[in-house]
Length: 210
Image (cartoon, rainbow, N blue to C red; front, side, top):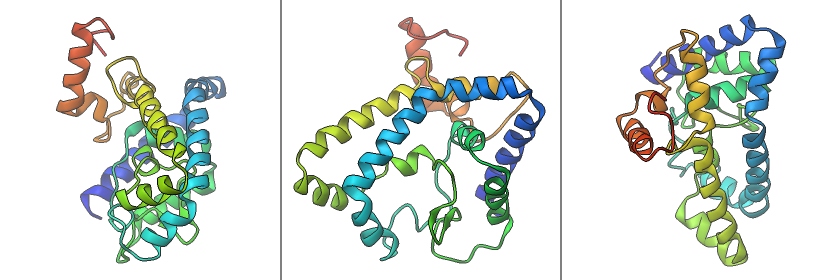
């Protein structure tokens, strides 16, 4: 098992172990924290299906040209793992565990199955990745889509970009406070993101201890 798979599997198992050990009311509280984010993801998915569904499958997956889906590993945030686990059933979680353990010799992302992504809610980096050629084709067909996409990208920052209190930071902190550690906790470990948090704290946008 390579380092990427080991990081993914270790994080997934840690999240599942914690979620199995908390009361149902606490699990619902975590789900409630993600309510606005899930609404954002639904609207984003509708937009992408409407404007990019056919383009991306034809140009990337079927042609094997994708700069993302053709790699063994993609960037996942700790919060991606948490939210997906909260939404998924035991069968879906076991499927992720098994593909991470299995030998990987195909061209595609380890999480990409015959019917698409194996995650119930795919990582935000995957959801928001559009290549230049796909955007050019889609936006030429529907000029108004370009502005809608810009607004969705800006909205994403309100959940992931720690220049203010954001969901991805809060979920990492929740698990850190309960003794969990993961290399995917980028909002508490990445030098670049920590610098953004420090700058925001200096401006009074967030608590300096976050």
